[in-house]
Image 1 (cartoon, rainbow, N blue to C red):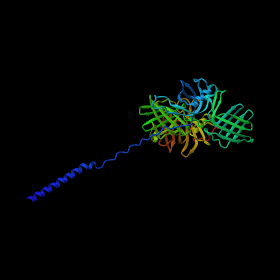
Image 2 (cartoon, rainbow, N blue to C red; image 1 turned 90 degrees about the horizontal axis):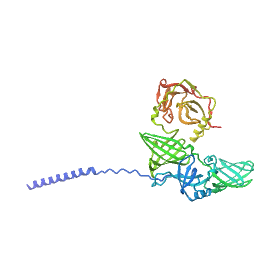
Image 3 (spheres, helix red, strand yellow; image 1 turned 120 degrees about the vertical axis):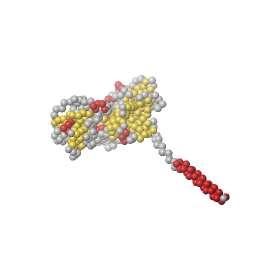
Image 4 (tube, rainbow, N blue to C red; image 1 turned 135 degrees about the vertical axis):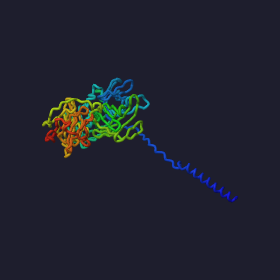
Length: 518
C-alpha cells in the first residue's frame, strides 16, 4: 500500500513539474525575440554657403550713422555692414555724411541675425573698386563688362584697356595696340605684363590693388596702374571688369512635381519670390539670390508672410535649367528628389488653370505660309540671345522661319526651323512676338513639316498638328510652352480640328540664314 502511494505521489510531482515548465515556456516565448529599434535618420547640419567676390554697384548712403546700399535699377535697400575702410574712403569722397555716392564693390548678401525682427538681408562690402559722387560718374550707365581691366591718368593724359589678349594704349601722342599671350588677371595681387607691338615698341604694365584717389574729380579707384613705354612713364588708377553678366540669370523658373507646382522668380535687383501651390493652397516666400559664377546660384529665403525664416537652395545652372539636391533650413539639410529640385526657365509665371478654358473666337482663312527670302534681323538677334543663354555657340547653324499669330494678340509669332534635321524631323523653336523684339517660348524636337494650325486652343494659344508615322499628333500649349518633343502625344483625326493654315507648306526650306550675326 505504501509502495503504491509513493508511486502516485512521484507521478503527480512529475506532472506538476512538467506543467510548470510548459506554462513558463508559453509565457516567455513571445518576448524572447525583441525587434531592434529602427535606426534614426541622422540629422545633417551645415553652415549657410559663402559666395565671395560677387560684384555689385549702385548708390550708398548713410542715414543716422547707418549705411544703406541700393543696387542699380532697384528700389530695394540693403543695410550695410560698415567697416573702417569703407568709412575712410567715403569721408574722402564727400564731407557730407548724408550725401549719396555711386559705388562698385565686391561683397556678399548675408542672412540677418535670426533673433532680430523680419528685415532685409545684410550687405557686406569686402573690396571697393570704385566710388564717386553721382555728378562725377556715369553711375549705372557706366560699362562694367566687355573689358578685363582699364586704367587712366590725367597728368599727363593716358588711357589703357585690356580686352581678351589685346592691350589698347592711348596717349596724347598716339594710339597703339599690343598683343599679349596670357591675359589672366588676379584682382588680389600684383600683375605684371610686358609686350611689344608690331612696330617693335615696348610696353610694360604693373597693376596692383591699392587706394587710388582723384580728389579733384572726387573719385576713388581700387587699383593703381603704372605704364613704362617708349613715350615715357605713366601712372594712374584702374578697375577690373566684371567677369560675369548676370542679366541672363534673372527671370522666371518653374518646377512641377506630382503634388505641387513651384514658381521661382529671380529679379535683377537680387530679390526672390518663391511660390508653392499645393492644390488650392499657395505659400509665398521672399528673399534674395547671389552668385559669383555663371554655373552656381544661391537662393536665400528670408520671410514667409510676416515670419522670419532662413532657408537656402544652392542651384547648379546649366543653360536655362537650375537644379538643386538639398535644402538648408536653419542649418539642417533636407535632401530633395530630382522631381523637386529641377527648375526650368520660362517666359512668364505659370498661368492659372482657369485661363485654359478661356477662348478667343477666331476666323481662319486658308493660308499656305512659307519662309520669306530676306532675313529678319530682330529674329536673328533673338536666336543669338537664345544660344548665349544656353552657353553654346551656334557656329555654322542656320535657320528658316515663318510668321503666324498663334495667341491671337495681333502680333505674329516666329516659328523657326534649325537646320539640325534627320529622317525623324528638324529642331523647331517658337518665339513670341513682343512690341519691339521676340521672346523665346518653346523648343520642340523632331518636327516634320508642313505643320498645320488647329482650331483648338489652350491658354489662348492655337494647338499645332504634325504628322508622324502616318498619324496626326496634336501639340497643346500648357500655359508656358508647347511640348518639348513628339513622343507620347495624342493622335487625333485631322479632319475634325485642322484649319487650312499650313506652316512651311512646301516642306523643308530651301533657303537658310546664318544665326551668327556678322
